[in-house]
Length: 279
Image (tube, rainbow, N blue to C red; front, top):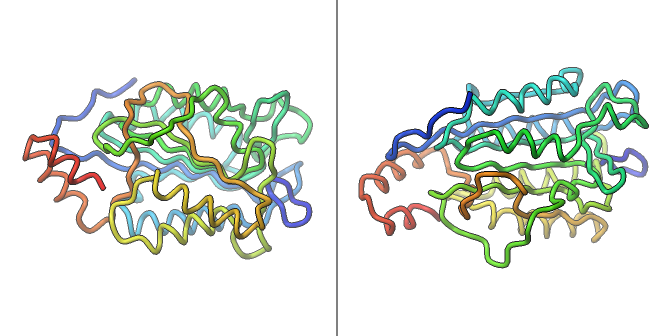
């Protein structure tokens, strides 16, 4: 994330038995006060607001939420938590990882910038290759990576484009939603408010009332980001080049009825019931 002119910003468990909807895990990383890089204004409050929406309105519980804010968001801690997810997240679980902070791109490789990083010392950064390698080891049903950082689209290097997005929640998926193209900076927004990307994401989630596929959410967010930034910023939604994808899709389930609907669909033991449950 770039600061100037209002800019910011780039031991496995066995699958659970059929018939039980898994848990929803969230790892949220956000940094305003960098030790050596220019500070940002809204990353932490963006993450806090997103967490509140996911926990209040959707099936994300505090006991499955991990936060790394400010001085906690070191390179070591971020990689440690990513590594730990490989043993915590099971085969029926869904995982959302959210990063908000500075992003960089060097020689066509994208990076997250942790809190202690020196601005010109790439060895301090976390490369997209590091991120993908850690995601490869997580045996989730669904993994969704959401990044609000400059050059965020660089995370999709090597991933294939999909002409028709799948709809089946019961099959595994690996997707990413980035706030900016691989060659774009990302706006931090006015101090004390939200970034255009995070505000768009939060508002779309707030106004929704039913099960919501990421393939429906992402285009709405992208359109709103483009409008808010007067077409200066383009959010990107694509598959990740991560092991485990089985042409499924991540779904945000409202808290009030997801469990009972899922049990009913599984009890029917039919593809039609599962597809009816999937929005």
